[in-house]
Length: 287
Image 1 (cartoon, rainbow, N blue to C red):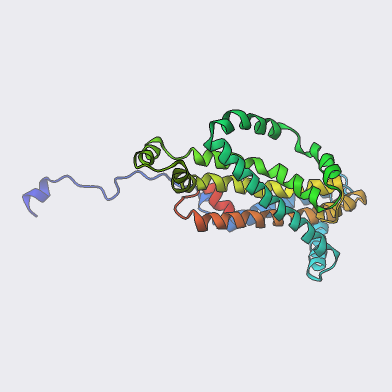
Image 2: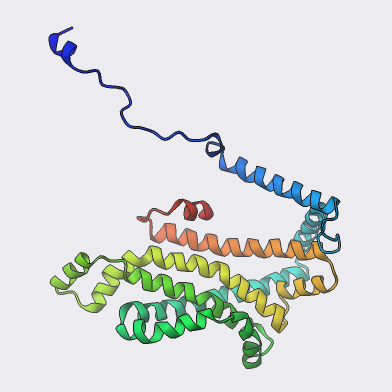
């Protein structure tokens, strides 16, 4: 051993402090989700057995699961529930498209012009604070009892997050980058298309994800209050007949529709905004 090796201080193998991860954080996600689901079903069954809530109002988990299979069989055989689901799906998709187009246009107006930010945005915020469900009778009286009133209400409930996401995305570019584009002689349109929109895409897709969830709420509420032939009407009829297992099973299938819409938006974000690293919550929900 040389003299230099003797005098040199010993370097520890690990010089960076690492935080200890608890055992619950090391459990695989599918195990945690399954355990949480089982725990929820157990608590639900206990509440049902001790009759903390009337069985007429709260069915047992077994009754709900059985009705899930009944509804699923009806959907697979192409019976009336499949047509009802297709009607609600049309309302959700059309309402989502209208919300995206309208929200993006207003978001660009608010985020790109002083007139939109100072004059238009206060009115949009005021409209968003209103109870949107109260507008359902107005949409029915204006557009009738058909699918148009449900689509309008769904778009009306879902368009504001798109506005906020678009406007926030247009302000995401830092001042130095915008000054660089201005110095290079870029026009306002070129700056918008080549700088602000690409950088603001993560914010825009965050607004789309919120809209994808809210649009289902708008479509179902429209069917509750304005009639129709979709899943919302089936839920209303089942509730009037005190068929609570059917109500629970239809709600679960509607949640799957909302998740499907959300996952489509999440897939599009990973496809077109591949450079953006999602947060843990967004990444978990998208998977």
